[in-house]
Length: 236
Image 1: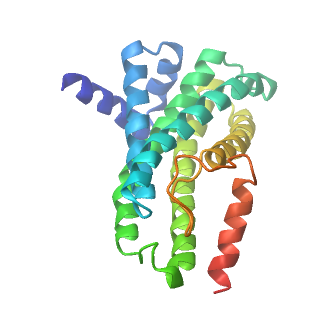
Image 2: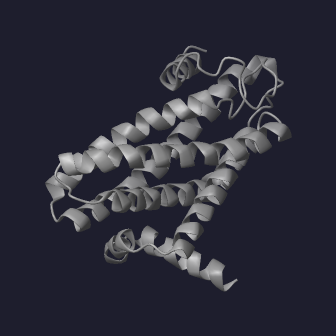
């Protein structure tokens, strides 16, 4: 119990934007704090994933509760490696370890926000016509998909505002911090969205079976799916 309280108090520090402490943690992150942060990220994203998959079937909720944390962790690790090279080039001279810690803390904040939004998503799904209702399934699927995109975007923006403040504290330059943040955001967008596309389905598609992965996971892209859903929503 004391470990849980300690972990949550550390997360509260991040959410409040106490960048002095967060900057110190990038230099000397204890194994216990890192483990607590990673567990928090997994739990928060798993709750949101379970709510995501619930509309399709209980099995899909379980699958998505496993896959969504995998998306978060894979994107975090992939971008941390890329960002460690970009930061010095763009004027923020921090070490690879500091980059990883900063990126990890921003993902922890996003996962906590998504975990907090999971009851909202579950309520939305509870009040959405079932997937089996073929005459409404198309528009319902589009509404849920776009709502999820909006929630993920909100969590990402909030977390990256804190990340920007941390980069300013680490670099001492708002201009350099902005350049680094924009470069990191581009990496998050492209890597995270494509990883999520490969690991689909998260909600499930009307008429297709419940699956852990699609038979053709490398076909198409996340951005094509969002455009298709927008067209489907506004042309019906």
